Image (cartoon, rainbow, N blue to C red; front, side):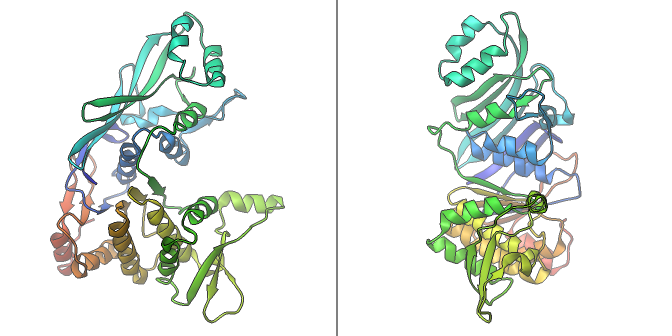
Length: 386
C-alpha cells in the first residue's frame, strides 16, 4: 500500500507531496486545484510498466489530434503532461512514492538524439517486424528527433519501458503506446479509474464478466440494494444497435447494458430506467472488486448519488477495500460525501492508517491531512475541510 507520493513537473504541479496515505483517501479542494491530476499521477505510478493508462488519461481529456497518416490512430499532445503545458529538450516529470517501505518512481523525459538507421536496427531487435518496419520508414540517417523515454524505477533497479521518437509535430503515437503495453512479461498491480461520467457500458460488461458466478458478483448485487432494497439479481443485456440513432446513443453511453430483477415485479427491469444512482453504484462495486490487490481511482465519487445513500456507498467501499486489499483514491466537492465518510470513521473499526481526507490547495507543496479522529471532530463541530 502506498504511504506517500511526490509529484514533480506534472500538469499543474511544479512540486507537490501527499503523505500519510490510508486505505481510503478522499481528496477535496477548489476547482482547478489539481485533484484529478493527482489521481492520474498516482495511477501512472501504480501501473508500473503498463503504459495503457497513459493513453486512456490523455484520450479522456481530449489531449490528442486525429492523424493525417492512415497508419496512425491518434497523436497524443504530450505538452499537457508537463508543468505549464510545455516541454523542451531535457524536460522531465516524475511521480515517486513509498510503497510497502520500498521507493518506486515513474519518470518521463524528453531527449534529443541523432538517429542512425544502422545503429537503431540493433536497438529494435526486441520489437516485432511490423513495428520495426514502421519505425524505420519514419527515419532517415540524418534525422534529429525528440525522444519520449519512460523509466520505472523500483529501489535501485531501473527498467526502461519505452524510448521512442516523437512524431513531426512533437506528439506521441497512440499506436506505439498500445503496442508497448502488450508485454505480458511485465507484472503490474491492477488499477481502475472511474471518471465523473461513470464507466461505459462496454467497460461495465467486461468487469461483470470477470466476477460472474463468484462471491464478488453477490457483492455487486448487494451494493445495488443501497439504492433499492428490492433488487434481487442483475444480468447483462445483449443490446443490439441497428440504427444511426442507436449508434449516437451508444456514443453518449445511455447506460443500457443491464437488467435487474425486483422482488415485487415479475418482469425484468432495464437498469437505465432506475436512475443514474443505480448505474454509479454498480460501476463502483464492479470496479472495486475488479481492483483486487490493486488500486481504485474515482473522480467525483458522489456523482449521481443522493446524500442518503452515501453512508451505504462508503461502507461498501470500506468493507470491500479491506477484504480484497484495495487502496482507494477519490475526489469530491460534496459536503455530504465527506461527512458520510466521517460516519464510517466513527462507527467502523478503522485502523490508524485507514481513512484520510487530503485538502489540495493551489500553489501549495503539500496536502492538508485529516486523519480518522480529525475527520470525526470536523464533522461533529461542523468544521469545513473542503
